[in-house]
Length: 123
Image (cartoon, rainbow, N blue to C red; front, top):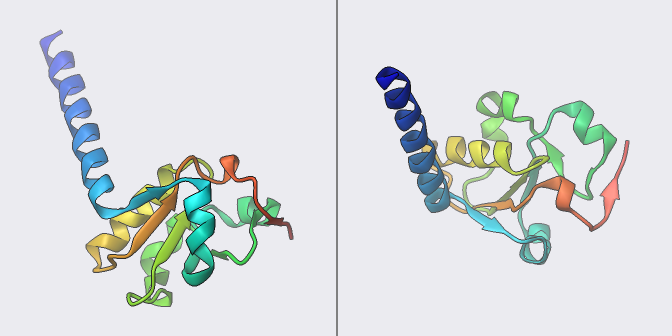
């Protein structure tokens, strides 16, 4: 029983620390804030290709989180990067990965694509 409590406590601490670190690395934007700046930035959809094909924000490039490590060189460090996924979890992880590699101007859509009410393109 105590081992279970220790493991549970460790998971909670890890989650809180990760959340706080993520807040320092990436700025979560409301849809309105996101819409105001994404046209002047690199807009990246980190969802899988089938999700992207089903509908994505107009002008977004698809670099899935699973391919980000290999495709990071496609992103410029001197321009803001606006990230989004379905709910906000993967874009947060993508931002952490980019931050560790020296990218600093990082933003992600709070609530993800499922909250987006703007223009959408489907393949």
